[in-house]
Amino acid sequence: MIRRVAGAAMSEPHRRVWRSALALLAISSAIGCVQRESPHPIPDGVYRSAAGNEQIAIAGKRIHFVLQGTDRSASTVEKEYNYTVYPSGRVELYPMTSADALSGPVGRYEWSWDGTVISRRDARNVEPTVSYSKE
Image (cartoon, rainbow, N blue to C red; front, side):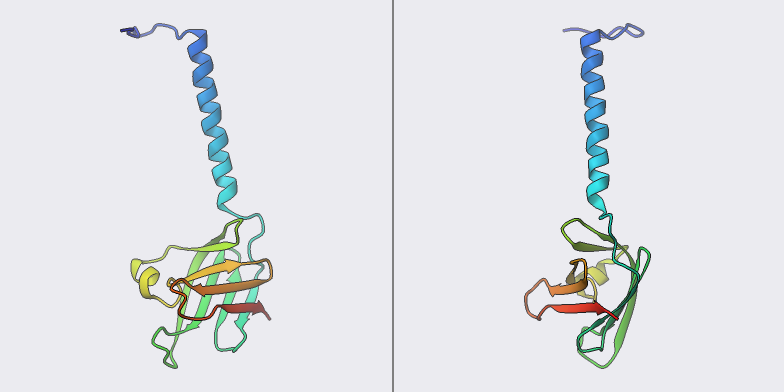
């Protein structure tokens, strides 16, 4: 067994291994940051559903929803979140409470951005996909 003595210098091969490991860690961290956000967020503006009864407003990194309630009543629900667009087009909303994520009118859908239209898809495939176009 080899023991390292306090204050003893590290050998050159060990230094190279540590430098390589640190460089790899820095590169992988940078790649993770780049993949997290798309360089092209959703342009500011108001996006409406084809039926005209729902809208999404974008302002910087904030997204504001005005949607029909989940009970299909005439009531509307307003929610606002920060958002991130992944390179795949998937839109992540945050912070979101567990109640919003499980049963809310926003969190129960999968949201995406294709460069022109915001779309919501029912993850359970019960409801048709709804698209929101810029006014």
